[in-house]
Length: 103
Image (cartoon, helix red, strand yellow):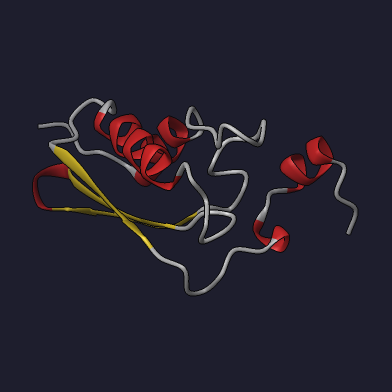
């Protein structure tokens, strides 16, 4: 069985977008943690831009599917958390530039 790396998982997650924001969930800072455990089981902790996000379930399911698409991944699980709350400071410099957010 191939060893899966966090970098591979993050690259796959960069194909997952919040439908309301043209930036991927990694660059938005929505992925808080990725753990790879026995037999390439992926456990992700993520948040969303607001607790009332109507797309929460869809985004979490898409993140799970993107992680599962990495060769060698046995399965993936997503936990959505609200603490710590998301804020624009978590975005990558590229995401801030794309959205016109100045620091």
